[in-house]
Image (cartoon, rainbow, N blue to C red):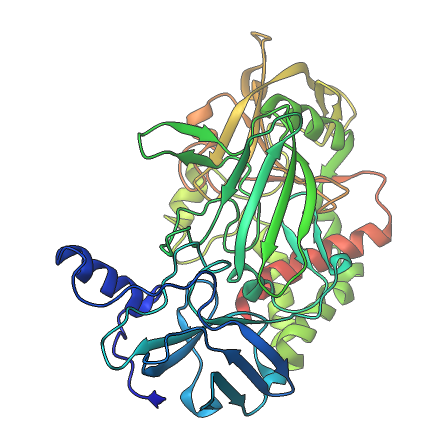
Length: 454
């Protein structure tokens, strides 16, 4: 056996096998001999301690050369050559690692070629799970109970979610009552990268994903109203199986309105009261230290306690690149706002009704491309500046407050630093909230904003 420099350093997935396949095709399949081996050409005999032993099913005159060892299904991360030694004994390739306890869980591709040039490299036909290409898998040690789906994405009780996602073999999606299974793979059956859209880089399920066929046809991964069984298989991890039902937009809109039912006052005048200064200070000091923490707390308290919006705010802050203070109060004379099913109403400081209308879902809307929410519209002709309510997905149960806009023009409601609603986003807080909820909303606000500062 020989070990040498990576002769195919530009290949991240199929290494020498892909290049040889192309050359053979261009030469009418003349040149190197195809291996007559089914399954792995070097199956794993054992993994004990720091030693991985592979048994060779290669021809006797295959001059084994180990180029490198790569981790993950994309084969992009090369294991340092000083992390292991490789030896051949009889028909076995023995890989002795310095310390396997520090190695990542998942799929490891053992990149070998025939140094004599007679044979093709073991191919990737069938994908990583069934290919000729030698490989071994290290277990994460997790059990089925350690993997879960929280309604939006995958959650691990231990280990690295990023490592898990880089070792996905496939995601199987099957609608209830249907035989057809949609298979999503990072690496396809021919060893090439596939169009994988089932999960994003954070493990979030792509509920609105669309599969595009070679002929141009498109089909959704999930259809509203259907129930699905989703199976996620990853090398080195137990399978994760969960049920999923995509809610249609109308259902989502109805659920949000139900979740925010109650009466709200403006959030920031409540939580920036001096009696809560210590609650603001604690997460800031924990994140930034005692020297910078107090200044950070004051900065955060003022960031959403502005009193300017619309043209006045644009004149004061411009495009916001030099800083701005958002106005998060209720505007147009409103002191409290009540959500009661499809009816939204508001009262002034004296308790007099300012508006009261019935609203219906009107579609999705994005606030300057930074925040996405749901738009509700009333059919009442006298609604004026209360014709539309633009609701963000916050609820008292999730983020302990609400964020929303209301107004008379959809285009203006979608702009955050220009127009009549510039630098304004109302933040509501339940009027019956106790100090425990106040502590939660302040802590969450600080943690979310301090994450970037750290």
